[in-house]
Amino acid sequence: MGMLDGKVVLVTGGGRGIGRDFSLALAAAGAKVVVNDLGASTDGTDIEGTPAKEVVREIEAMGGQAIANFGSVARWEDAQAMIADAIKAFGQLDGVINNAGILRDRMFHKMSLEEWHAVIDVHLHGTFYVSRAAAEHFRERNTGAFVHMTSTSGLIGNFGQANYAAAKLGIAALSKSIALDLGRNGVRSNCIAPFAWTRMIGTIPITDEAQRQRVERLKEMTPAKIAPMAVYLLSDAAKDVTGQIFAVRNNEIFLMSQHRPKRSMHRGDGWTAETIAEHCMPALKADFYPLDRSQDVWPWDPV
Image (cartoon, rainbow, N blue to C red):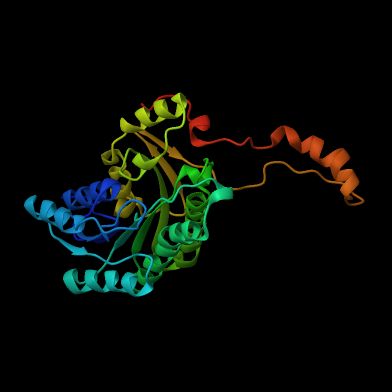
């Protein structure tokens, strides 16, 4: 018996990289899989084949069941069709992994409007569209689980990724809202921040020796390391886990913090701009967050 026997799961961007490993791991755990993949390049500008079909063939070769879907998560009509395809083929939908993504990296002061909108459309709008399309079916059945891909680029920070970081931090907030709004219907929603070498991460520009060494460390972390967490979160074993953010880094799993008050200052007669400058900020400054990136927070090699 697999952990996902009898369940049907949709994986967006399921034809390559982490998405492919998700699709294969879900099938190995007993799920029927809807493999969605537009077949686009890492920047979303070109169609480079039909990886969804290739993954379906791999799943069928291992004795599993799967169908391919070629819609774009950035189109509401396509998102609705993904859910409809799952129900038509398998009679139900039990889980969604919102994994599809593109990169358009650029320093903020050079980022074009097109680069901003393209990344927001695929990551943030796409996660909303697919989740919203699945929500009615989940509510009708009083069950369902979402796994959304966030990133330390948004949770912590990174250079040259304002569009990606904004979308990924927005996804974390969206996941929490889904967990709150649909919890009464037995629907769960969690995030994974993955560390893995993928086709998309391979576009990171190498500007110095430190960055080259970081990229070499990333190459050691395969997408297959992320898949067990996704399988778990979609299973009944995780029925009490919702509204959380997990980072998976090779053999390490982290429960990530979420925004909460850190320190406060009180002044009985109220604050002025001058007293804020003289009293409040000097007291709070010791607890300011530095301008960290993920490699500053995780300075040790993956284990």
